[in-house]
Length: 409
Image 1 (tube, rainbow, N blue to C red):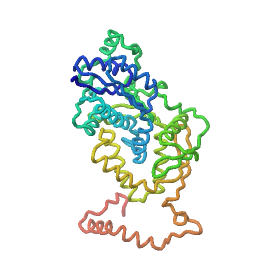
Image 2 (image 1 turned 120 degrees about the vertical axis):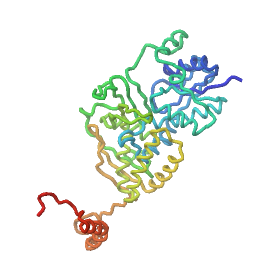
Image 3 (image 1 turned 90 degrees about the vertical axis):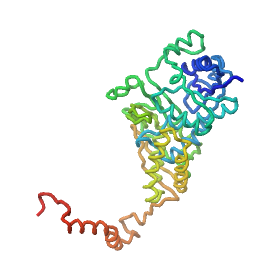
Image 4 (image 1 turned 180 degrees about the vertical axis):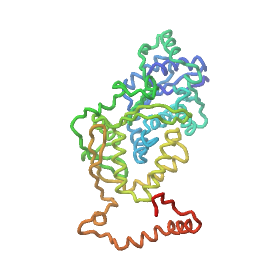
């Protein structure tokens, strides 16, 4: 029986050529798998037919936009997932859902190997392969560009020689990956980290220098998930799409960052994530109102570790799974409304309300009706500062007291 390889298929030049390239190099039949996570472009049926025309024995296509938004973007939102405190994990989040469909197709069509189009320098090779072995330890993985010497020049020559139904002349100067959660742009002149991004880099966002009239939106959350915008019920996918449109029109969510790749190099990336950044901003503020102080402090550390794990391709890891349980528990009371003003590249919180709020007006006010017993503050401070006081007295006793500087008398 001929072995089969399941290929993550985009419909572009490299993966179209990879179908025949893998078949010639390994003798295996290729099953093409295309997964729609909101990247736009051609219709899935067009992509499916192209895969068959390029030599695939089977072509599996999946509209995973709702699945991606609900099962991957929403957990990231609840975790305030930001790598290096800025990057909302646009590409990292999409890889595990794609791999899930690759493994599903491998089981369905009897494949023993999974293939992807990543290079040997990026994070995505790790994300694809670790996710694959986490879901199906028996499957092998190959990468035509990395393992089978499929260069861009060879891909163009192969496509022309075999008359494949794919354009070979268009060459975008950038490497672009996009989905419903955002858009990632790298390479080209951006590799010189002194070069500023030019207008043609951006697609999801308009220039924030010349914004339209400010846009006010009220985001309603239930247990950390947006369920309505301006009182109109939305699904997770609709929430992200609508905030992409509205925040994108105001230039919100542009990120230019030099980040630490998992493979050990630093890489300059430009991201656009208008919906993600606006929703995370609103969610963080609702947590400020509803999370208990120590819980909130601890969660910030969890968020950083969670983001690092996802960035590093460990979506299906035991630690990530355990952190998910903690994050889920913190979201029990994260329900309510947050009012945002979107304008000039910024998403600014101007109001918040929640029936599960820990904010008590009568405790917070300095006006009449104040219910905070200020007479208890003195004793609290004395006990709170006792250990520091004892340590300072010891320092004084052994000549290690605080240096108050030359001006001290």
